[in-house]
Amino acid sequence: MMKKTVLIFYNKLSKKPKDDEADVIEQVNLVTEALTTLGYDVQYMQIDLNLKAAIRQLQAIKPDIIFNLAETIGNKGEFTFLANSVLNFTRIPYTGSPLIPMFHCSNKLLAKRELDRIGVSTPAGFTLKECSKLASDRKYIIKPIWEEGSLELDEDCVFMGSDQEFINKIVKKSHDHYFIEEYIEGREFNNSILYSEKGPEVLPLAEMTFKGYPEGKPKMMGYKSKWDEHSFEYSHTRRTFQLSKADEPLRNRMIEICKKCWNELGLKGYVRIDFRVTVDSEPLVIDINLNPCLSESGGFMAASKKKGLDFPRVVQRILEDALRK
Image (cartoon, rainbow, N blue to C red):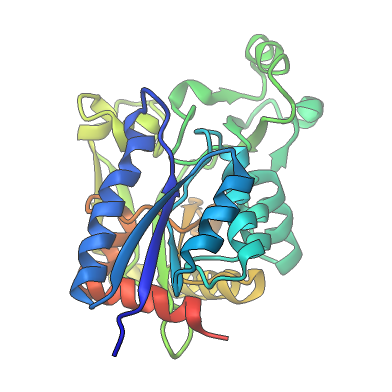
């Protein structure tokens, strides 16, 4: 029997990639190893902004299936969905979520509207034109609309609604690229979901803990805590899967929300949904990460290992969902 060919499809790196961009190469290597173990032939293709060339190349290769690892194009988050547009056009089966959910979830403001539509709670969001709506006694955070990997996101982005000097600065930013979200003081969870024959399986829930943070320092997963190994934030942030018995209602509620997002937003393959939990134990979705990072240190693979799933099995399940009609 002839082996099936899987094409690993990933973004061409910029000339001087930062760690968050270069991370895709580790993922390519890990997926290659898993696919080889599973008995597939593996080919590779990079994508850049020459979309016509990408389409021609895909049509010439004609793989049986495409493993989509394209995180951005040209290192710009607003081009992320273009990779899915190219794959969608070729009609070759590809892994991960389809084009429309990818477009909605790549844009954080659109994602909020989708969450509102399906009745899932998320922190209040505001465009830069809506600063007059900010409450003076509440904290907020300015976020990039399109970027992933916590790019441009750290504690300096947190401010009080009464801080008019800070607000006067941020309103000068591009209104098409930044928005404001209410900052939730509370716990943070990264919850991974993987396709199974019985429907979406929510893997062990991971809480991000912030050890030894000084009083007043925002406890958040920013760029430093994810990528800067020499920073205080990186060394004082820990992932734990040890939820207490008292957290069972919260755990069940987050699992329910994860499955609702998967089913009603049309998600596929593998997803990570991030939550902030209020002091009243209300879980609020702050991010929906489609095709999350598959590197060894990433949250998705940590949850998979906690479940007892080896990487080839994870990859096989992702492929199975891509081939499912």
